[in-house]
Amino acid sequence: LQRSSQALPTYDFKRTLAFMLYGGMYQGLALELIYNKWFSALFGENVFLKVCTSQFIMAPLLTLPIAYIMKGLVYGQGFGTSVKGYMNDVTQKGLLLTFWKIWIPIQCIVFGLVPPHLRISFSAAISFAWTILFSRISASEEQ
Image 1: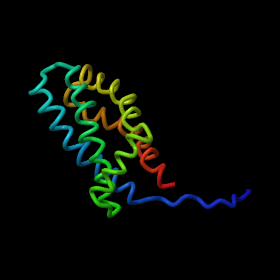
Image 2: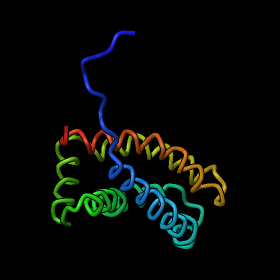
Image 3: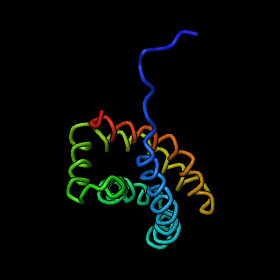
């Protein structure tokens, strides 16, 4: 066997913790309430309004900033630093456009076809792939 002279990258437990907290607290708990209770009460069966509210109000103002704030808390960064990192990724790395390319079609499926009791589980499965991509976007400035 030939050995490489390059060291293997170290595993970042803090990054994993940040994404687990975000996934469990926001994507798991909060979205159950928001999508299955509040959206149903506000929008009934209107898929268009649910997707637009989620993507164009919640995503830029709540969903994505919370991920950056959660990561900042785990890494001991202040609120301002976390929000600045989010704004940098939106303006310099196309974070929102990437998010929308994935999540607008997915949410059309979620709100249009997936039964309410399976929405969060279905979204979590898709979110696994998104989290990998999101981690790469948010970590690219650190490398």
